[in-house]
Image (cartoon, rainbow, N blue to C red; front, side, top):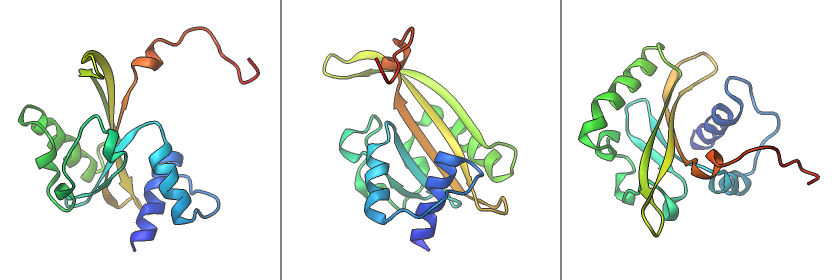
Length: 153
């Protein structure tokens, strides 16, 4: 069951509703999950924290003891109502994703940087709600991009 769940998460995250072609060995999957340029957390349908990546370098740090506990323990009280609303809408099939962004002091100088936060409903092939993927990424560097930089440049 655990192996299938990991595969479903990566399918939903990378390919949405389309199935992934081929199978990934666990070591390759783990390497991908630590290499992708964002951090994520996964909760189950009962709103319990299952796992997260990039533990050492996370923007939103949490102790390992959070695994198996209610996701509400991971969010500030001021945003908790909105998190609960998003999850309820996902469970009810009224929402597939939520996107928002905030300015946070990050890095050695604690300069304000833009952080993109996205929630994705995780569903099985029949549309049954399985949980939620919360993905966060510091996008300050992306915001500074301009023009083009092609592969051959």
